[in-house]
Amino acid sequence: MTSHERLSRKTLGALPPEGRPAIDPDALRPRIVHLGIGAFHRAHQAVYTEAAEARHNAGWGIVGVSQRSRTVVDALRPQDGLYSLTLREPDGPRTRVVGSVTDVLHATDDGVRLTALIASPDVTVITTTVTEKGYRRDPVGGGLALTDPQVLSDLAGAPAPATVIGQLATGLRARRHTGTPLSIAPCDNMADNGQVVRRLVLDFVAATSWSDRDRLLEWIDSSIAFPSTVVDRIVPATTAADLHAAEAALGLRDEGAVVGEPFTQWVLQDAFAADRPRWETTGAQLVADVAPYQVMKLRLLNGSHSLLAYLGLAGGCRTVADVMNTPWGEPIVRAYATEVAQSLTSAADLDVPAYVDSLLVRFGNHAMHHRTEQIAMDGSLKIPERWLAPLRDLRSAGYDTPVLATALAAWARYTRDERIDDPAADRLRQAWRHHQADAVRELLRILGAPELADDTPLVAEIDARLHAQDLGIEAGLSC
Image (cartoon, rainbow, N blue to C red; front, side, top):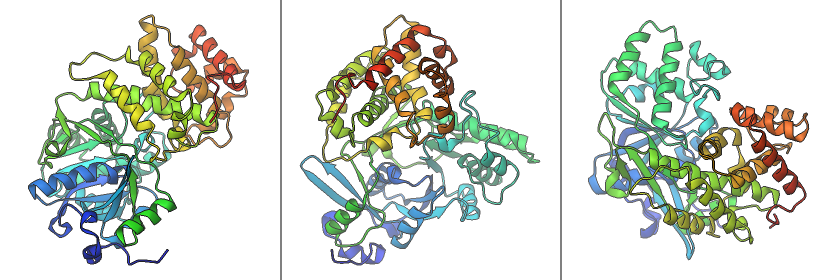
């Protein structure tokens, strides 16, 4: 392929009209800080922000912050924050450049500037997408993991905090001197994510030896909002083929290209403390309570996604679409949804059957290449909310839970793999030093569910389904 010039503000004029940003990047200024500028943010919140800016011209620019790797910084900084989004429509891809990111920082290398931005009165919104493990929660109590080495380093006064919670607390400490309110909206798949992050920030501040600690805690309580959110769009990891396809579509080289499905959803709690983009004019939903949306998404979409990933890996399926192409893909999703939907609270504006139908369409989109291996990562952090919460509700109400038992068996089978990618990988492997039924009990304890580990009928059912999967007779697992 011919090597093209690189995407940047200087080369925007070379783009085909349909590939250009919806706004003028030069008209933006830093008004939002986003912690965790990975592919998902660039395919989701940044797109909503650009669309709102196109309607209202309020200068809403985003400064994205990479937490660990410099890969995103090195890709986007030479491109002035510009990148392309390719939507994988069933009838063919559509590629265009998104212009809402004004700059990209590295959290520790640019720590001084990050603190200054969080303190700046011009910045009135902070959003985050750092995955569940990025918040450093105690898996048992749910508060900040105060024994985590990076948390301890930040509490000891590291020059540039390495954790997201340390970055927020340090920035808020600097911001208190301006007295200006701020909204922090986490956009990761955690139930009640706003209140979770609020607690973690307060835990961090309370654990410091800062002389102004008590005044800071009071000010955060009165001036900082933590609205909860629900986000949804399938965004697979970008491949070399995706980069080549974006270059072919744009006529410019784009090292920051991302891809996503056509579907997108953003539900936000209407509880902001300061000015924000008018996201609700571009398809986002502002609601008083996001909980019904959160629970439905976590339990139905994310839960069935994890189920397909673990069963798919057992059957040699590389992608979710591959799973849906099997005779058992759609039936297992419908069976799972039927079982888990019994744990949902009724809400007048939630249409569960239509939601499930939409999942099947999305999962079966063969233009997407969402890898089962990617979805299976970090299961010990995802499963408690996706599977164990409905499992507890259903069993306490006297319902049978055969599909959730199948799901847990598939995950248990995965934990025996030496290549498992999970923060609790060592403990998960050690559980298999026991006989299988005892290993299942230990795995449930690692997930923070000792009462389920003591549920002998449940353990026996998981054990039996694990035997069946090992024999290859569970739903004829294969691709």
